[in-house]
Image 1 (cartoon, helix red, strand yellow):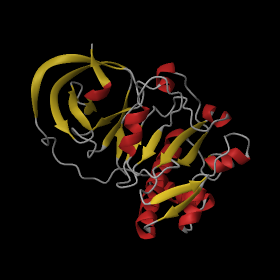
Image 2 (cartoon, rainbow, N blue to C red):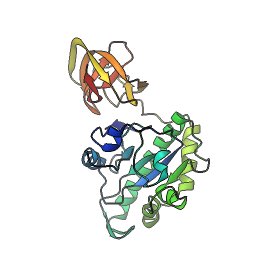
Image 3 (tube, one colour):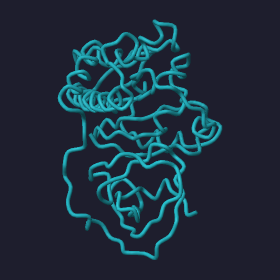
Image 4 (cartoon, rainbow, N blue to C red):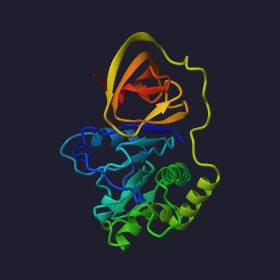
Length: 273
C-alpha cells in the first residue's frame, strides 16, 4: 500500500482543528464516475467547504491519499459517526454512468471490476493499519462500517455506498467479508509499504546550511529516505526541527533530512521557523 499525505490545510474541517477519539472506521465510495483521487484532493482543498474525509483511494493505482490527520474530525457521514469514525472514500470507475440515485450503467465491466478490486484491497490494507494504530477490533460491532450501515444505525445520512457499487458490478464483496479480510491482514503481521528501499541517494538535492522548520500536523511520517517509497520510522511530533539536507523524491515536492538522524520528512507540511 502506498500512502501519500495530501492534507487539505485550506478545508474548513482541517482549519477548525477539532479532534476525535477514534472509535471506528467508515468505508465510503465517491458516488460518481471519477477514479482519480487527485481530482478530489484538489477540489476539496479550499475554504467554505465543510465536507471532508480522511482519505481517498485512487481507482487507477490503489494509492491512498490522506487528506486529514486521522484524529481530526471530518464531515463524511452526515451524522454522529463524524464524531467517532475515520472516513475513507474509494474512487469509482470512469466507465460507469449514474442514471438515478445509486443506480448506474457500466460500459466496461472488466475495467470496472478491476478498479473495485484495486480500491477494495487497498482499503483492507489501510483499515488493518489503522486498526492496529488505534487498537481497534475489526470484528467488534460498529467498529468498521460502511456509509450504508451507518445510515441503518442512525449514525449517517441516507447513502448506499459502497455496497451499491459492489452489488451492481457483481464483485461478490460484502462488508462482512471486508471486516474478515481486515482481521486476516492484521494477523498476517500488519500492512506496510513493500520494501523498495535503497540508500538515501535517490532524487536530486544537496546538503544545505542547517535551518529550522516548524511541523504543526500530528500525523506526519518520518521516512527512512527522501520519498514515500521508503519505509516509515513512525510519526514526528509537532514542534521545531533542524533540517540539514534537501532532496526531491516521490510523494512530495521536497524532502528534508532531520539533524537528529531520525530520517526524512516532507517539507510540504513544514514551514520555516
